[in-house]
Image (cartoon, rainbow, N blue to C red; front, side, top):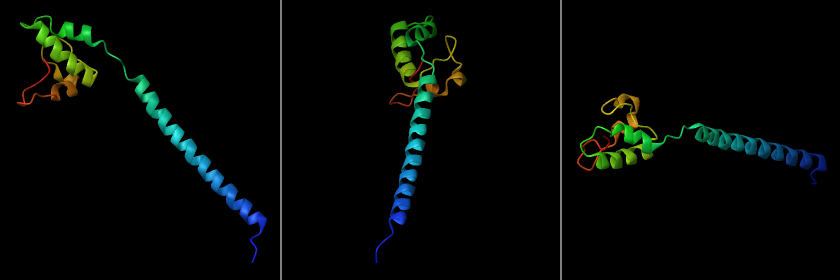
Length: 103
């Protein structure tokens, strides 16, 4: 029993259409992720940490710890102390001893 050419052609076109829709959806998802990454504001960690640590008794140590936290979280709380609610990621980082890592 032979399969009609019209049936084979219509199945082929249906599979091609499904593949095209999947490719468009995948492309749209990756472009949305890239757009979100592009809109993430970049912060100047050096100047933000210098402002944060300007009143510290050990400014070099403070800037080093702040720089690490800033690089991971892309934010530094305003002011020279506290204000952790402005940057929850910054506040959640701890040392091995479960002490706050970020100044």
